[in-house]
Image 1 (tube, one colour):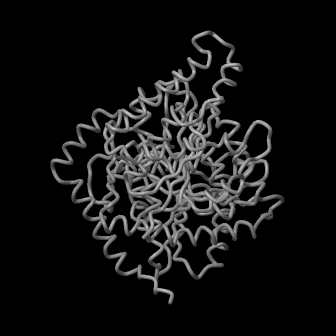
Image 2 (cartoon, helix red, strand yellow):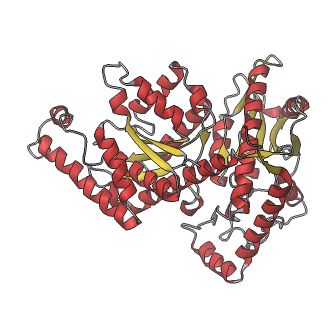
Length: 507
């Protein structure tokens, strides 16, 4: 079977590679056999980029506009900017996992003049790729204008069908360690979801956050940021594993109904969100859906234990330290597991006196699921918000940023806008839900195959949590982690055998 392709898009005006230099870069990435080889390469190329700046006038103190003009005269076949270093690192990891890779500089296609160059080439690459890795420098906590131009072009050219359902992940480089990298990744991830991509962060080995976060305050120093490089490697591994799993899933079909959980975390006193969800489910006899009423329960606040979860154990075992009879999470625990997709649901209303909400407390308390080696890994997820116009809660963004931390695969939010008691866009939400179901079928097979083949390699890495790290070693020694993972594998084996079959070959 042909390898799936991850397309790397470099979104910095300082890119060193263009034209034939893109192909040279790909050859060098493929030639790096080890992480040591990769490190040596990016250090060498970052030094070349600094040298190019010096020769273009930095050493002589030329104004930057003159220096920049001189730089553009270079052939584009050597050197790497800081953004390119991070993207190269992510692409190498995707290649190392087993994907084919491609690389282009967006500046080649979107010059300052505004006239798009080689549009057909870019369209072809987007159509042929199976996933997109986008790298950008940080500007005021957001992406570059070059990346924004690319996003606008996708919409204007009617290309959303060609990218729909393709995994997307990002890396961002800022001048400070906390220089807006995460907000940049979140904003572009949310926009990518709105256009139809499936959204991913970095992987479990690098704490499953929002993507690659590089720190480089000057030209040529990105290779010195070990932490940032590791998050980029994690991003490359994450998108590669999801793309490969979905690629292999095309051989199979889901014989049973996809299992979808609606986590009702916020509603109004009239049950507006629950009524909307019930009506939506009623339109589909092709899914197995459950509504888990969380808004109507009593959920206590997370007390931020120094060790979480209290111990490693099988998924079905409730492991939060809070065991008060007043708290309902223990009884909810078993109703949160075993689904192919999770849709957090909330009613967002202007009258706060009518709102029943456990959203924030529930999200806090799901920490033990995440730290239990990502119970919800690779489950498809999208928020569903029934929002009165003018409520202004930004719940879709908040839910997205919470759920991606659970190592899920994100899909486009389902936003139902309500005015004067009526939902204004029922047909649109229904169409989006149909797409979500289609993606759930593919992702369910991909997830089950990963677990069944024991390829997922998941392990929560307690970075920054000293006592949790000590406890993690103890649990590992007692084989609790092995038992937990083995339990998941056995369930996946049974599920795969029962629910998945090979597609018949078309003659």
